[in-house]
Image (cartoon, rainbow, N blue to C red; front, side, top):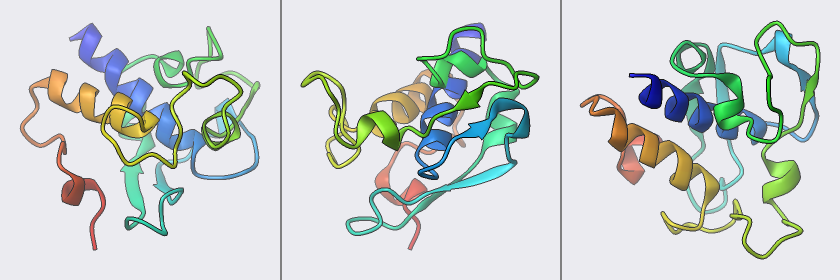
Length: 130
């Protein structure tokens, strides 16, 4: 169960970072977020950050900020700040649609599959609703 929670939070954090170009404080996290980084290719994705945060540690998704919690006053950068034009060639890019190259697909879908939760979306149209 801890592994599932960690994976779910990681996926959530990745999505949270992608929702805006500005940083927010961890203790100001929102309930639902919209990820629209791929809006030109696919419909935006809406996810419940609060629900995911109950399942895993913040740093699971916010992997560059060890020890981050919902009580932290640290600023949390968006996923897009690192995953739009990554410095390293090995860092996943948001612009990739591949399940093995897009950071959301890597983290979110893997976590959903690992969770064994039949309601956790794993197919394109289940997240990218038209």
